[in-house]
Image 1 (tube, rainbow, N blue to C red):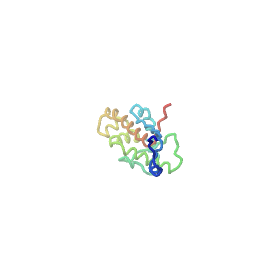
Image 2: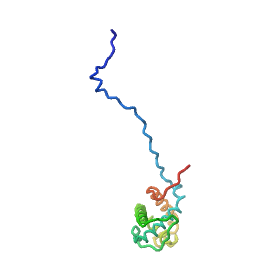
Image 3: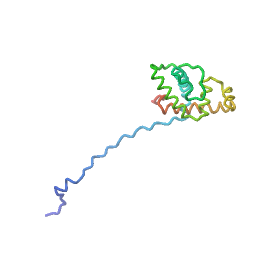
Image 4: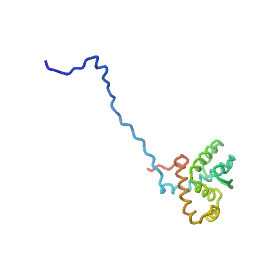
Length: 159
């Protein structure tokens, strides 16, 4: 008789069979917006800031995330349907604005919300107009990146 290795029936129950491993689909990495991406959406960010001003005035939360109360505002073309939508939008915008450095908030407040020129804003902030002209676009880009992260600003998908 040839010697074959046999497994006893009682030992067979203890053998664990592994299920075939199926590769899990990897989640698509979300590309981080670069300055070249965000600079294309500065007008949209500007419009969202103007809409934030308008909605915050309607909901009686003027200047809650900024240091001082701000002046008049107007809404962008996309309507907010209910009062609750406006409150949620204002809260989400405040969260994004508060995540910025104080100098960025001050520049955005003076130039976008209060409609000062770069020269006037520079005098109010105690810096040169050239510094404002250099730092303001970067502040807009940082806010745009925050808006993209929070989902308030959605980038079009690349085809």
